[in-house]
Image (cartoon, rainbow, N blue to C red; front, side, top):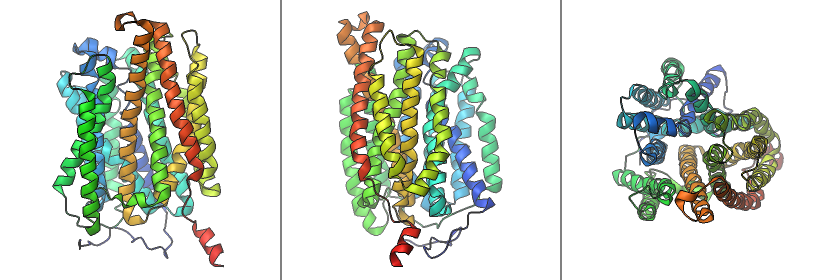
Amino acid sequence: MPAHTEPTSSPHEPATEKVFGPRERLAIWLLLASAFVVILNETIMSVALPKLMSELDITAAAGQWLTTAFLLTMSVVIPITGMLIQRMKTRTLFMIAMGLFTAGTLIAALAPGFFVLLLGRIVQAGGTAIMMPLLMTTVVVLVPEKQRGKLMGRIAIVISVAPALGPTVSGLILQWLSWRWLFIFVLPIALAALILGILRLPNVGILRKVRVDLLSVLLSVIGFGGIVWGLSAVGESANGEHSIPPLALILVGVAGLALFIWRQLLLQREDRALLDLRTFKTRPFTLSVILFTFASIAMFGSLILLPIFGQNVLGFSVLESGLVLLPGGLLMGLLGPLVGRLVDQRGARFPLVPGMIIAALALWSMALLNDTSTIWQVLASHMALSLGLAGVYTPLFSASLGSLPPRLASHGSATLSTVQQVGGAAGTALFVTVLTIVSTAAAGSPDAVDAHALAAGTRVAFMIGGLAMTIGAIIAPFVTEAPRPSEMASGRA
């Protein structure tokens, strides 16, 4: 039996009403702001690649590793965070997360060449991977259930708006300044958050002395790392830019993941699992994970494909291709609190079902884009997708984590964050690979690909995305929630 240490805050007792005062609000806002900054960096390199290739004298395949290595590191570290959150105090883990992110940002800003810049991105990703599970777990621990939907709406802003704003921020900076300023601008914000967290962040939850199973760590590295690396390599391979067959990487990853699952099933009998899979015994959590995967594929796939379509088909500048994604990102940010209130008042399915339908229709509308489309058509399609996804993320967070007992909250949040990374890598790989294959077939050869052929590839990629979200829209009505306290009380009456 694992030994328990003294709780760092009030234990999770159903009979006790949680107090959500100024101290708790400060903790949530600090974690929200910090998570927004670190998640923004996931996609900030997306439109910077051409400039980096020129200034650092690297190939596209090498430059792609600035994103691939980031995703790889995230996918490897995130499964471990469920265990870390149980073993370490909130403030200590926050200091590690923001300390790593700040150090990585400094390394990247001062990097004399490509390999040091790559190292900085890897260190950044180590901190980013810890932040989102820590934020979600803290919300479940601190926030009373009747207020949780509103806070989940703010988390949805972080997880959806921050990646959408990455290309816009990058385009604005690169229009006038060096790529180093992508990191210089972030550095003082990260430092301020780190200092404030050290001084004011409270410790929450109950610590447990959980033994670390090194075999589980190794299998998680092979499993999640192999799958994400393989998916990220698919697009490069389609261009003939990857030396290792992506299918081999994916198969190694699948084998590692199967062994990881087997190992967790054994360890969770003694409460020693690195990632406790008993979360999937709850149907709302399982269905939410499936829908969350579809949403991540749609969001990250569109984020990679629309700038390519805008620049290479419609002739947008780097700044224009970034700015066209800005209104959609802002729309998601504005709708997050509103959707959170709807979840609190009407339940998760009320905004989830129409959100999935709107997102599916938006992707089908993107399948109509061609080389004569206007910037306004691209803008309208992306805003429609953003509108739909705004109604998806908050309900999924609320239904999934709200259905779990507190002891599984850290494992549930780590699972959702892992799904986001694997889904994001899958969406990027799927959309880019389909774009490359179809456009090459339409042109007759890779060297003959023109705007018309690229537009054909774009349409097919978005058709597949539309099909995935349509399946999600069919599943959405079956997502149920745990009974709310008020409903249970009325039932007893």
